Image 1 (cartoon, rainbow, N blue to C red):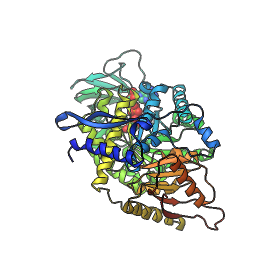
Image 2: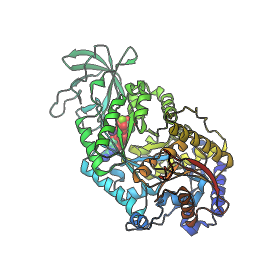
Image 3: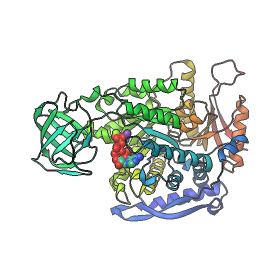
Image 4: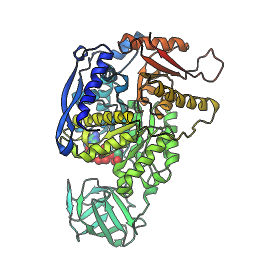
Length: 575
Ligand SMILES: Nc1ncnc2c1ncn2[C@@H]1O[C@H](COP(=O)(O)OP(=O)(O)O)[C@@H](O)[C@H]1O
Ligand SMILES: C=C(OP(=O)(O)O)C(=O)O
Ligand SMILES: [K+]
Ligand SMILES: [Mg+2]
């Protein structure tokens, strides 16, 4: 489809939706504004973007609503629904790394308004006090201004990297130059000397092996080994960045050796304890090599009565690829951490590995985030490269649950713009996939073992088929732990999934799942009453009108029914 027709498409979609809900744009504080879209030959063509000025209320909004037994619907999704209608709502979730460039309350609010679903804090950088302050600000925005932004901490993990290369910033490495790699600390500046972060960094390394920096920034040949020290000659010139990572290659293959490093270091456990105390929603574990470390952390969270904290495993090592399925099964979700993965495997393998991981996660019903370098050039420049937009779109086409910004938001001056690029590119690709009916057919691997689990799974598979075939406006699901909502999401339906839950932990975890809009509400044992009440609540807000259809799925276990669970699918037409 030609780019020029995008504006017409977007405009007509907005007008249609606005008319459908009987709104004029101005009536709910929205503006249709022209903005850039990438056109042929790099020219910027006209396209419209909808700017929502969410009506923001100050002062314990959630508390007030809870007291009244009302529905807690975040301001951003609500604005988006009013703007674009049910079918126009974005399905792909957005994660932003918070750093010095975006840590003020004002900047965090702008990111929240721009569609940030999850804020990521990378514990490699900055102090715990700094991270605590950011978490408090996000919780304050949620509480006082009606946002729903989940918080993720990302552990440092154990990996061999450069501690000191004799300069505060980047150093150029010339071909033929000879360098000493050592674990010994040295004072002051010592040219051509690099200190590694780990004593045993050279264990098992032989003369003739190739030392690669940051997956190809520069390469060296080991020419002499004295004790643990390596004397190396540069064979491929390049750059040494601060905290650059090492990998060793022999006969064209990675020398796998850092598994003796624990996945969870002492510092990581302290950071995890910090995260639990601060009530974070996700812990992303760096350099997971097998399911054990994930299990260890999950046990710890269980003992700490912190079961609502979800554990995400970062796939970024060669070992993790070899044990992918057991890691996915043990975790609550996965991050494809392409930055370090591209150091551990040849980077030309990243695209296929990414697609495989994304596919396995969907099969096993675990959310997956694709991370790193999505819009890398925007760390410096205000527009992305066309190749970056194509990469983002490909992730969306692969139906990953979420996209992540790293340096683009943490240190770049164009973080909000980068977020809007993700937002526009994902909405565009989702629409295209729907129009072209290019939903990739999910190989229906059965997950459930027990009968109730198998029933739930089958109900969700069929419910999505019904929803798509009937063209319903939305799917409503009532869920305690989020299982039914995620089984519906796994089928990547056309309409959005409104997941009503009484559990705030479930709500914050569902924030990462494709196409799910989590809402907090009081539910009773009477399912029929819950259904009519929630439909009424949404209708009262003016977002459902006569003739709209909703497919309703429930998995609550009412006490008056003598069974383990009670599941149903109904199609309701609003009268
Ligand atoms: N909390 C923070 N404080 C300061 N700088 C940060 C923070 N988080 C991220 N950064 C900066 O943003 C860059 C990109 O973030 P990220 O990709 O998460 O880290 P890394 O480059 O270490 O993998 C980092 O290299 C670092 O310079
Ligand atoms: C997301 C990643 O991890 P980190 O930024 O913590 O290195 C990555 O390696 O791609
Ligand atoms: K990290
Ligand atoms: Mg990494």
